[in-house]
Length: 434
Image (cartoon, rainbow, N blue to C red; front, side):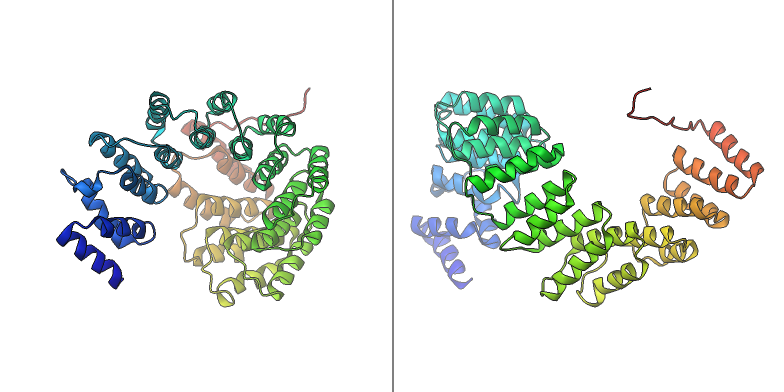
């Protein structure tokens, strides 16, 4: 900190270029220094020291993640002061564009400028363009940039495959992977994209082939890749393969354990999910919010009432984590499924966080299943307070409560209320043909 103040003082007094460049490098990791330099660049007549491409690139880079719109502003100011961008400018700029939802037109202009200035054939610029177009949902443009590349490296393929996989274009990602095998050996990032695509498609046969391919190529089973394979097998319906993959991993981190817990929860193996959680904590690995959501969901789905209560109580007591809304929702669902509707209602009323509609509707569903009319009426009032427009499902559930206990007049009244309010019951549908 003292060194930073010395550099700032020297810069103000002498306009020393060495001090300026030292502060530029410090600004990438030191927020107060960045704030000081920002004012130098954004004043109406910046210091002569600011008129280098390196200086503007540094400011664009420093803000590209934390404040991407400021990165775009610095680029605009750079152009306004006639400072020429270079090959390093556009990858930094496009990275900022990919993190800002309101910068699509800016990115398109930047793409045009790379063509105008002759930078479009630089592989780093092209790879960044592919990442940007994939992240913004423009798969066709990403493919166009990729197809026009005279030379591609493993980063190019990884950018395309992982980009397509993460934005819902899984079949295209797998097609690109098939072509890639004839040109360039895949790396970990590429395989992560491929595994993610297979998981989204739920194709077990393809998942087995991808796993075999990884083994055949002798790719290192990193924690990230192993975790992705666990989730992939679970998503493809093979919990046995997911568990085997988990057991064979040489290293695991919290995400790996959480993936295995989630996999058991999804497949109805609630006791196994709790077992894995307890094993993880015995090894000294501290769970996070996401881990607790997974294990509490498993308890809820499997009816593990005592385990669910134990685990929920440990969130703050043992790990110092403040429970979030999803944790409370799991307990409401757990109690409701167990028929403890009164306890679930009291639990919701005591929550330190304001319950959302999901929690109230979960409780309303429990009232229907076990015929708690009075609680259902109170819950319905809370739902109406939060959602004045009303949802047909809420009325249908309440009418079902009345019907379940033979209170037909109240059931008819609810249906009449729906008609007067213009709320129509959504017809049921099936994916099966007639």
